[in-house]
Amino acid sequence: MSDGPTLSDFMRHLQAILEESDDIPDREDRETRQLQIESAIQEAILFGNRYKELVSQGTDPLHFVRSSLNDDHPQPMSKAETLSSAHDHCTSCGKRLENDLDFCASCGAKR
Image 1 (cartoon, helix red, strand yellow):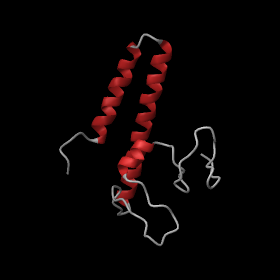
Image 2 (tube, rainbow, N blue to C red):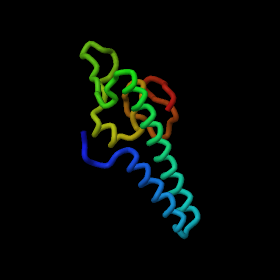
Image 3 (cartoon, rainbow, N blue to C red):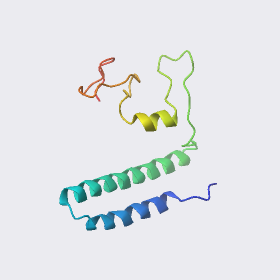
Image 4 (tube, rainbow, N blue to C red):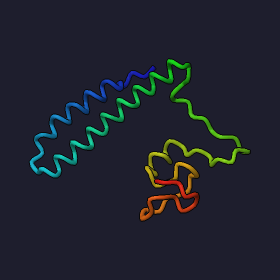
């Protein structure tokens, strides 16, 4: 197991910087930053709950599965590709999304 920070440590850090964000003088900047931090807290809570749920079912939540070559679905992106691409790829077919469309031009799935 890792000796680094835990999810609880991260959430305490987010709470601390949320309190510090009250000191941002510009109202719009302050509200934007607070929304970012609150969203991160919500994601951390969801991750923690989902992680516990998967562990209780006997599943390794951090095990990534690659699809077989005969599978019709696109190969999953690596963690690095996923982090760098954010939401610019379709979750249904994996094709690159066009910024001005609210659906995938390749398969029609909603963004």
